[in-house]
Length: 162
Image (cartoon, rainbow, N blue to C red; front, side, top):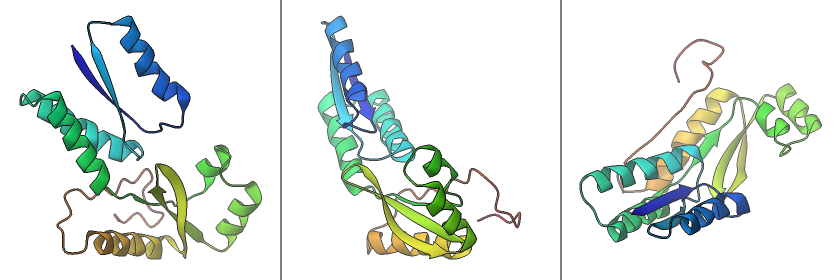
């Protein structure tokens, strides 16, 4: 039996060690670990594409090639309406979050080398979303955009869709 595991963070030893340990428990199976170099949505897209390819009978080598190709073409831009969860995770201080709230500064984050990084700071949520769209279209250039996801965990204060 062959298994392909797509993980979000190869620097987290537990995420890498779990599939390796699992493969030792099942010597008849083979586990291939792929670093998505992304977060939830990017990893999910890779996993869905891999599952679809497996369902259609693709070889493991073809699935690995497909997922790494997706990873290499994928770009993530995240516009946050609040720094609450970055504060809770220790990535941003309470002071910095307070100042950002006072001045209505919204961060735009991206993934570089598998790490979440601050790309820009933009004033107001509307301008932040406009900038994310600009960044996305600029990064795509002349290539078509295959998937463009705008998840919204909370409805904007004005109640209008994004």
